[in-house]
Image (cartoon, rainbow, N blue to C red; front, side, top):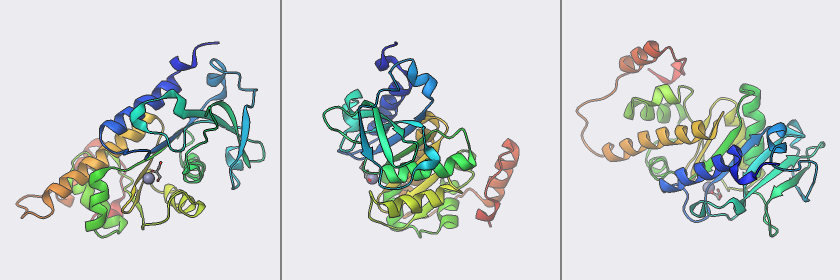
Length: 267
Ligand code: 2HA
Ligand code: ZN
């Protein structure tokens, strides 16, 4: 058996935590990540047949039955970059319980945002069977922008595309937006997952962001790009503008790289 502390899936989580924390998006215990892990890969490092304990999930996660996920612990501080704050769960065959097969020592449990994570995985996998990652954090400028900008998905996306040239290339599908809601609930989980049918980015207004991706790199990179666009918005929105990225600019860029974007979000 190989050393789990050398496993790409565990190191990748720590690296993603470090990246998000270094940006100031994960104050105190905020932020959470879940990443699907192939059982064959996990078996190289741990005995996946040994269930350490079970934790009720609280809703039906059966579309993920028998799938393994590495997940951040509730209350964990990303700033600690600690393997002790990770756990691997298997979703039981009936979709009702999480079987802890590694980690979450000392009675720890998975993030309180597990409903939003699992429900989002279920929806993203329907759109992209390669999607493995869901992550949440609190990017400063995006949160600030959500206080100032109308919370209309078309208008919000157009503004983000218009403040950062990378935007339409990195999130051509745009951003979904939820109004402020109580976090950690099944309600916000369901609402987030509903948006994930269309978007890989879901803004929780005045709270933070959810991002989906095939890899941790991709999901964190998505947030990075959205946050940069929001930062430019925050730096410029109250000042007189002399220049802008026009619809024509965006169309010619998207055509040049051959990306399929939300055409209804322009014009
Ligand atoms: O992980 O960010 O939304 C703590 C939170 C809850
Ligand atoms: Zn949060």
